[in-house]
Structures are given as structure tokens and as C-alpha cells.
Length: 505
Image: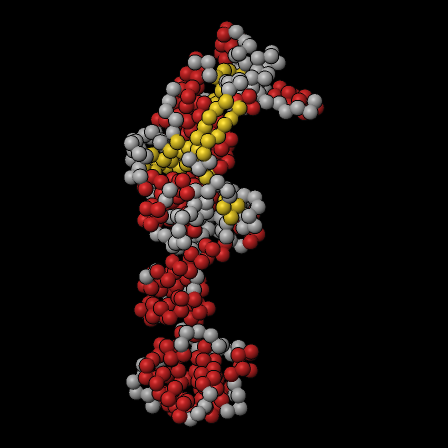
């Protein structure tokens, strides 16, 4: 690419960042880094009525948690700043004026009541009202195309509310190109004259986004499929302003787990999984929405999973570090079809990344979660985790997998007891106690050799010894190797637990 690649992620601070937004940010980030370019964060807060306190900070925190820091944005490398649209509103009027002067836009003074009348009138006749070439100059609508220059100026000076609309051309065919969707043809006769600017001094998204992308040198616009209907207008605005058009790529929707319909927060609430990267507390209602971070997911797992929602590397490989994704990413391998969100698959990724986490960090995280471990040496916890983490998907799984390393069983599983405890169990376990007491070198290898040799020489079935022994140590027929448990809890505790189950027989 001859130009330095510059992409932007431009969310609105109207609430927490949806996981679909994170996927859009990720694809922008990967594309930028793949081509040695810049990843820009721009906050599109022109709609102040929907602004939510704390949402901008949440967006930045989410990007940082996912290891996708922006190169330019609010408070960072602001050479093209400011990066909040509300702080840029003085910029946009001149471009709206330029479009009017070049004949590509016009003032419209129709009130919402008048427009509502036209809509209902059309509906009554079985038609659809579209504000465009078909009716804008017939005299029923009030705009600068039918008013004289003097009449238009008088209305503006009188303080009448107005909007500036784009003048969509008649009888033309637009030939557009999308990196993911290929060539697109649009008949301009079906387009409406979108509002670009309002009399309150604020631009609409359409104008602000085009102006900002141009002034910030954006070379590629990578955004969600929901913006595809706006592509024709945005392309025409670039042409009307005489600017070079960036390349566009519209990402596929993220679908519900059923594969039908767009993924929503309601789906997560219903099926029990988060749809936000971080936990969010609504500043007004104080309702809490779950986040992947707080639910125990690793950022590497979330990023790896999201990368496969709409993209594939063309190989069987599924595990990709962020560096691997940057190296492999190609917009030409992004699918057009929607990508089904699979809650089980993200758990699969998390299980994989669990195995790769440093045990020292897992031990610290586990200790923080459980008050019962406050007085336990973290090095001991680390050794325990090494024995159980293969069966864990989350740090929160560790307790159920390892509680018996920290406390003696308070009861014994009823089903397991019926299976493991027989008439001769008491005699066998007393003999095992003596064997353990006489084992000087209390290691896993020595214990295993001594006990297994004793079982073999006495021609006892292994299950008759090992099942009640496990039940005594754990309280159930689960857990890692019995000899590992015995070694970890030590000789006195091992003997004590076996004696306790004997007393219950």
C-alpha cells in the first residue's frame, strides 16, 4: 500500500461497548498493525441526548483490556484532534455551507408535524413518503430549492428551525466497491435526501463522520454491516466535496447462538453469557451487566474467539496469539454472511489459554477470590493448581477441583460411599495406615511403589483399596492422582483423614 494505513474505531458513548463493537475494533486494529499503520479512536458524541456518563472511559478500558490500545485518540497523540465530535462542532458548518454553494445540498424548513402529515398522507394512498427528487421541488415541501434566496435568508435570520439536506441526484447509477462485498450498484432514484446539519449547530452522523475521516486522513473505513445502507450517501459526499474516497469494508453481523437474528444483550441474559467485555453498571438504574473480564475470561481468549467471528485464516489453525492474528489477518478472508456466536466455543478458547497462564498468576488470582486461602502459602496453592488446572476453564473452577487440598472432607458422597465402602474396607484401610506410617521417604514415587506393591502381594483388587482411600482424602471419587494428594497434604493429615472415615464405618 502506497499510503500510510490509517483506520478508526468510532463508537458512540451511549452505554457499554457491545462485543460486536469490540470485534469491529479488533478488525480495525489487526488491519492497521498488519500494514504498519495507525489505529485511531474517535468518540462520536454528536447526539448529546443519548450520551451516558462513564461510557467513554468504559470504551477505552475495554480496548486496553483486550490489548488493543489506540495510537491516537482522546488525550493521546492528538495531532488530528480533538477526537470527540462534540468538541469539533465548529468545524462542520463550513462543509455544509460548501455543499450548499456547490448545489449538492439545500436548506429545508419543514416542521416535524408537516413531514408527519406527508407520511400519513402517502400511507393512506398506499405509498411511501421519501424526501427526494420525486417531491422536493413540487411546492408541497418548504426548502431553498423552491424558495428564493431572499426568502431563504429571511427564514434563517428570523430564527426558523431548519436542516441542511443532501441533494441526492436523479437517474444515476452509483458504482461502489466494498473490500468484503465486492461491486455494488445503487440506483440514486431510491435514495432519500438525508439530513446533514441541523439548526442547533450540530451535524448528523453522516456529515461529521465524512469530514472527520477526511481531516484525520483515514484510508480504510472498516465498520459493521448496519452502515452498508449509508455507503451510497457517504460515497456521494466525498465526491461532492472533491475528496479522495477511502476504501470501505462492511463486516458481517454477529448472530444469536441460534444463528437467527443479531446478537443482543437479551440473548446473553437469557442464555447466561456476557455480551460486554467488562462489567457495566448503569449510572441511572445501577443495573449490573456482566462482563467477560469479571466472568473469568482471559483477554487472549476473547480476542482469539472474536477474530473467528466472520474471518478465517484459510487453514485448520484455531489458536492465534494477537501477534499471530496481525500476521495472518486479511480483509479479503472476511465472510459476507453473518457469524453465529457460540458461547461454548469461547469457553473452549478460555480453557486453552488457562493452560498457558503462569501458575504464579493463577495462584494469586485464586487466593484473592477465596477467603479460605488467605493464610495459605501461595507457593502451595501454585503446586495445587498445577495438579488441577487441566480440568479448569476459569479460575473460579479451582475451588471445586481442589478444596480437599486445603480442608478435610466434612462428609462423603453417598453414591460414592455405596460403591467404595465394603465389609472389609476397615481392615484394609487400617493396614494402609500402618504402611503409610512406616514410609520414611514420603514422596509420590515411594508411596505409589509401596502401596501398589502391598496390594499386589496381598492379591487385593486395586479398587478395594484405592476407592475408599480416595473417598477418605477427598470425600468423593474425584480429583487428581491419590498419591499426589497424599504427598501434598502430608503424612499426618493423610493418616488423620483415613482414620476419620474408618470411624464412620
